[in-house]
Length: 396
Image: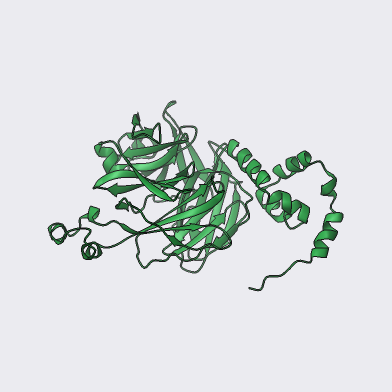
């Protein structure tokens, strides 16, 4: 697509006639802060003066900081058929006990037959992947951009999206695994081990480690990892303080992997020798600390909290969930989805009902509240729910 150049004289003329220039800077910032993200993103085209403020680092950090202090938002991704991805965003304080019908809706037309699965949002942005195709988007503005395709022929891929505060950039980490036969050819495992247990899951490790930095010259770069490990398919990673965390098998034990987005180095943290954690552990971001939640079938949920990221010390608390049969009947199946900053534990029903809803359980008060989102629960919809979303006007 040919890029259209804007007239420099027209920009100068717009700045001369721009009444916004005469307003004190503090008042300008307050006016902009009261506007919705999509309006701010559009205003950058109004004048060069406004663009310099909106795209400036100071205002960006001010907006993100204030958004982070506001009640976090629920973000629901709905994929219908093969042509439309919908995002529903609403505050965690809206309609706590009744139907939620006035939430924001943003739509984005996808490639035919592509169903993107998204990772947890980071500073208002979200990353989706289908095979080797990947997009980065801002649900608050509706802008999505396509990233270069991942450089691999492997099918089992883990992608984790995060923000590097040291260099003020966003990055995506991708891991792909090789087959056991490939491991044998490379001498990673012995042929005897392969023959003894053809399906030995731990024998398969990640081979390709790639990173891409969002920007004008973005491309995938291969990096090295000195810890042979295999990620768990179907699990999300999270970003915390410039480090990507995800669960993986390392030396045949479930371990916590960390990837520093600034130094681009890996590290591994041992997990407690707890059967339920090793078998069912799921990584969550709880109260600003790395937490692993484990639940064996319908039993109590154990929360393992890492009090210090530099030490392999974990504290355990148990949260007893209410009986599913007491609330919805014996036929209703609930799936653990995460923990809100308030401490409420989130469950969503399987399969997705119509209308779609999820449950917020307060382990202290022993109370359950139901949040209903109208208009998105039907048989053709694939639904993802995220509970720690902040609004952003960031232009991609």
